[in-house]
Length: 422
Image (cartoon, rainbow, N blue to C red):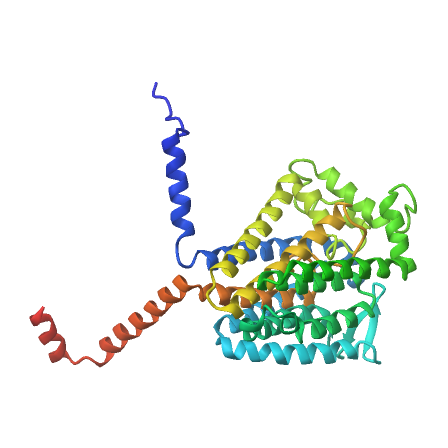
């Protein structure tokens, strides 16, 4: 009886695998495909899990189990169209959009303090436009990144001087962050602060400057907790999981119970028990708990792997870019996704106190999803302008139109003469 060949685990086989992987990673459009593939799988998983996690609450509230997932699908289509437009935009137009975006984000954040603004989840960070509502702080993150990348790229030769490094970048970003802080949204403010400091690190800011900003950020976070009774209750609940079981600890303990009951392979898709009322707003900030319950450790690790691939691709784009603006923009978007995902996962796993931060590309929410997709459009645009990718795409553009043009305009006699000469 013939035996099956054993897998090649010899040093030669290892070298072959390493060579194959290196060949894949050296392709000009690898970064583009890594971002596109990982984000597409996260979006598909997110849409599926929003349906599963929200079906019960949607049926009870709206008599329609598909209410939230239908809205999420609409947001997804709008975001994809916006991302596709940003991918094709020239760099000069994108840089102008950064300035317009910062101005618009500032105005919208100020409007949250007027009659148009309203409170949701304890934070006054929403604007009612009549036909829909938006959360300006989500778009402020992207505007801050694009605008900051433009300003710091223009000041590249003067970046070693602290006044040129920090002005006007620090005051403008600080203003946007403070507007979010006064809304009561500490989680989003922390993410925006991390983006601001992270971009300065990518630019090459001196360590003493980063240290001062870091100490200021720590002091700011402490102040946010001390001045808010709600945050202090959340901190106390985080430090002692056995207290306030029907209050501040309710959501965190329900999330841990969901993850623990998932085991290795989960309770199967749609089999979550906590989404029946034990876990409030399961389709939003705590959607990872439902993923852990229904898909188990295996599904949770897939989500983590996809975020790691996206983070690797973003850093790869930033380090490979030969244009300062695209380097800073790609780095800022990557920092945004990774920091926000890290905070969300840490909250769900009880490693941090509860903070209202959604899981990028996965959690339910129109403003967050559209802003995430627009940021992906910027990242994909930067990937297409890596030096080798730019050369490859330029060669394709120069080659394809010539064939089409000659096939249409070349006369039969000219074609016969060309073939005869060959």
